[in-house]
View 1 (cartoon, rainbow, N blue to C red):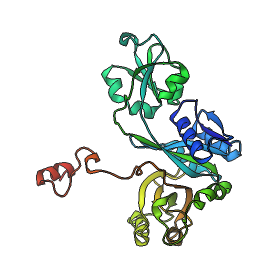
View 2 (view 1 turned 90 degrees about the vertical axis):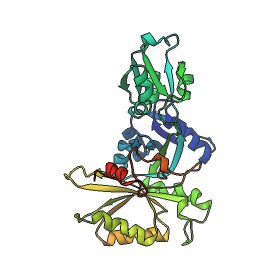
View 3 (view 1 turned 45 degrees about the vertical axis):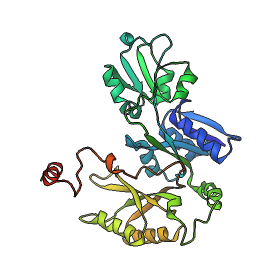
View 4 (view 1 turned 60 degrees about the vertical axis):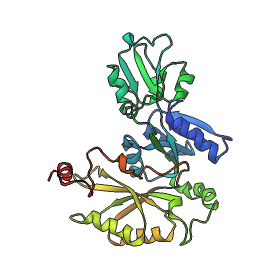
Length: 325
């Protein structure tokens, strides 16, 4: 099996590929193909040049990866059939013999990597320099630069570790999607579905997640409330909702919904039928078992809400300040 991914070797996506291949294929007969951009990974899968592709979807720090969303929305041929969730930690690397702070002027990584290491950059007065990937930053590292990336990068590119765990938020995670051609999705899901009964009315919806694009044909006040009401009436949990602009229409959007359940489960099929009956345009972007190793990114603890958020139990002055009353 050939698996395309965002390269070069040593990216977090590379790590996700290795983990997925080990869990799903045992690592046997797998060839990894690093490519320079998300679009290239998508195109390799669409053309059949690669049987699978792996791309980042969502960072718990930086949110959704827009090129991945847009590639799925714009593609008639590619769909997500599995996911991998990785804990993300960045080490800071320099070229051997160049750890003297006086000679370091720039910090380089993928934009999401730079955004997750801002404290380290600011404390050392470094100039952020975006790279196409964290591994590319490490591979192409100059003498006056610090690169951020996974520990694997230091080993692959012979770099010196300046500091470990330099991310701003410990415990960050990123979700990666495994892509295949839409006409091969049923075969890809077959061994995963065979592992348990996921089709009956009592099947646990937490076992699968589906990404659904909903484009309301008729818009206006209450359109989103109408859509979400259909979920509530059927007990289908909506764990995430983001919007992307329709590329050819100003101020019109497609909603990308992540829901708990699989397209073939009765309550989800009923939901789809109701939305279609209301005139909405639908497209399943992917369906996959919930990755093991912890809850999804949608769970929020009380002490993790944005700074300055208020609760009904707060005093009147605090509520007024938070809500600008």
